Image 1 (spheres, helix red, strand yellow):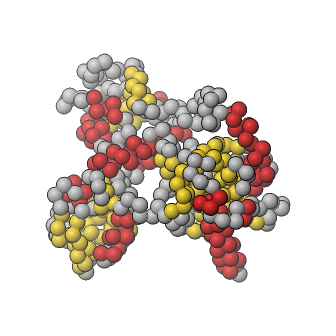
Image 2: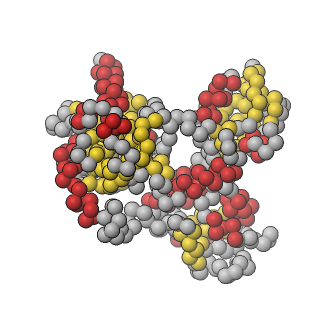
Image 3: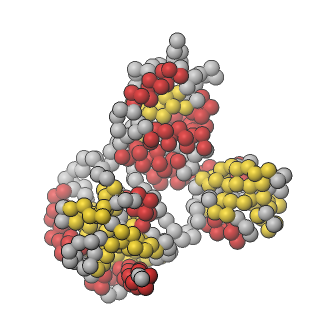
Length: 444
């Protein structure tokens, strides 16, 4: 017999309560369920395809959750269902986790004798949001400005995984060489490139990891390369903060934004901290001091533990540890493998910032995601400018223009609620030259 959790209002297997949570909606159905009821629920829910935005939200949570919670969300992804089933302990840990974006879960406190808890999540589709005529992204305004970008359309392509658009690309050589955002296509092979209404196979040629730029080759007839030299100087010399910028697609203008911050490095803008005093030993890096209240202390590390891996990177000396931590941002959750009295163990730590503790940093990171769908890699670029165009991840990898139609760079990431990043044209020209030269040198 199924006993329902006595929460006001009462939730049953057939009752759903809609709760608005800032810019997201959580459709929440909660019940104590038996193993049979849980199996039936998952079987039924798996019939409905997991919406794209919610799928991406679940994937982002995977990076920051403990292994058992990660398995719960991974199961939902694998089963293409928006329903996630937790034990009582798992529910409480997810509810209280600072990276949990559904704050209304904090109101729910199931009794100690509760069984499994099923949550059915729903996010409003940002891609299908109704845009009114007076908004900057209205179809009317885009149509009025579109002629400025028309000359660039023939140099823009799109990349696809099955029936899903995953990135834009820029033609850089008439023989079929194209650049795009590496992290959006690299782990999704095989992908295709849509050119002239035809999906063509893609060969990955080279990757510039520092800038997250990939050079690919498509076997097709003559293409039209982009003109990176349409602006001879850095954007700072030709465009100022407050100026409008345009993001074109293959045959239409996709979005309008405002140039915000002039080119700079985002590699070490806000450093992450673990909060340990390290020293080199033969087996790794020994912790000689854990500071109470720091990220290391919250993760359960103690004096004498020897860190051997952090975030998937091997730790041999102190420089390795510093480099591995700097590859992350405050609020990131990282897996740490260590030795305690010679026994291998692991934990996860939420990294702190210079001016904020780890829990606050994690909450800030979560808040920056609300109202936007961030790129897989959204930071750590050596030289980019910032603008506020509300791009989707699949709209990165293509060019960005000024109001005269000049190509001022390539969109490389959606970074936050009001921030997108682009690599300036002059830097892109250097990147492309290096990639093309290296690819030719590597040919037999």
